[in-house]
Length: 145
Ligand SMILES: [Zn+2]
Ligand SMILES: [Zn+2]
Ligand SMILES: [Zn+2]
Image (cartoon, rainbow, N blue to C red; front, side, top):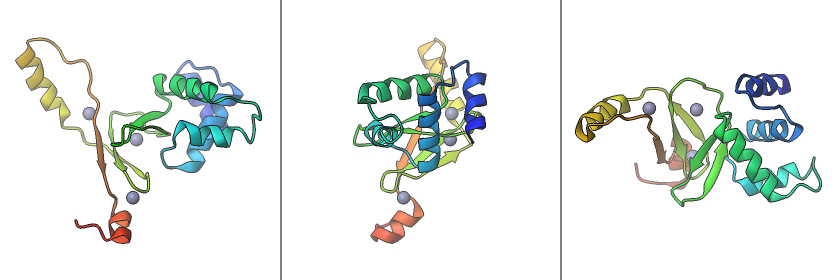
């Protein structure tokens, strides 16, 4: 596991510092998206005097290096998630249990083409995140489908 994270960091030209490796292990073990505060609480077990700003900075660096994904909850709160899928894809996030599912088909390319035409410019990238409730949460909470 540790080895995995090390090589992932190396392939993205990021130094495999103990803090970065610890964050990746925490996110992997959680398997759901976590807030910076939650990561910080878990980091303190290993790095007693670590401050929240350090955790914020490391999360941001890992996200900029695309080792982890940023999740913006509909509440506007920021979370982070470890996804090992390196190909172009999007995420379905359950707003309740925080489960994340990979959506591997992307039809936004068509939208990009239309937008390029309309603005007479060029589209460089897009961000798409689908928010909702997973099957388990619907069953547990009696939500209407
Ligand atoms: Zn759910
Ligand atoms: Zn993913
Ligand atoms: Zn896409």
